[in-house]
Image (cartoon, rainbow, N blue to C red; front, side, top):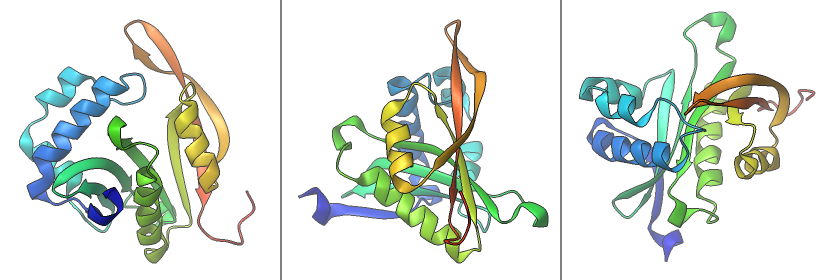
Length: 176
């Protein structure tokens, strides 16, 4: 049933409300893994949300839709500097809990990486909460390797969380 109705595509401005709703759900689900805070996300003006999902040469937010419902997201962006155009940052990966373990996150990432390769991106980096084993397993299964830990990267309700930095080489010949 889900496989027939699942669509993966870049978000457009008309998806801004659904994106905001899903981001709020993501923050409620995992406040130690996603920033900003719930209050900060709610306070974002609509034009900021539109800019965040605007598909450009340098950024795209992919959405997974079950019919008309946005059930997963993954963002990718690149810096506008020639010396850094070979790199991209993966951010904001989230799938609604009811849709997890269906391969949706992997599909979102496959679409993101395919587009990145088309643009000449050679490596993708991300940060993941060091306690989020589920996400780390997903990223490792795709080929991401860890290259460091940022201690106390996030503070939630007075508790600090470390972030693991991971890298995926998209060019097949690169050493990891």
